[in-house]
Length: 353
Image (cartoon, rainbow, N blue to C red; front, side, top):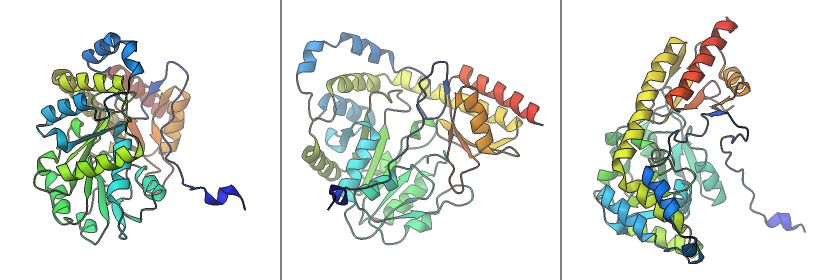
């Protein structure tokens, strides 16, 4: 008998390409084009190597307290992890243990089905409509839990808080996770509902709007009992998941609200300008409330545009999957980066005619 017979085999998540060459315009992984808050760099320089010989605070209390103060909740209502992927994986492991399938959209963050497969969680995908919006009625059925990203990825579509509340209210006997990785770019958080619904878990990240994808910080906010269950699983898995530099620099990022709003405002303004200019080139897209566009061209296939951009040092994201195989997800970069992309597209489409 081969030892491979006992291996847990899964189809892994495939992240966006990380090119190694320099002078690339990287618009394929939804990173922030601006640096973190100034205090983050200052804190990194101030940290003493001597402190790294000690274990970090397993409760990341300094960061948790900063988040609690910012979001006006109790520290006991916050769970932190190594990126929102870590937080979500822990939530899947903790809350989705029933026999009924969990529900999430068919076009969405492609890690959800990976975690479900990994943890042997039954799941069912709910098809978005032709405008890539959720059909709320699909979630009014028996289930083992619900995960909805809002705004959605890769579509950028935002569903109203009212729609989210209908879904939460109809599923009081299971945990409903609202994944708000992109909410700071024009969406509205469901956080005000956490005291009303003890089954609601809201997950956010520092990777996008706080420009700290490389530091890996994610967090969940919810009812104290939900958070305590998450902590129990975390401490049974790995107590010291968050390192000391992450705790210190993450705290600095939370305290600089002025800078946070400045860079998210820049990205929103650039996104809206680029929408107009791309529309003039024959592109159409969803009404994105994220830091990316989900675009299609009126006559040129998305895969062709993707390849042409890549060959000219501009990376965007393309999936050869049903329903989205003629669309590109384009991260919003700096104005300079977007202008270079627009200039290339203008020339390419003109020469192709």
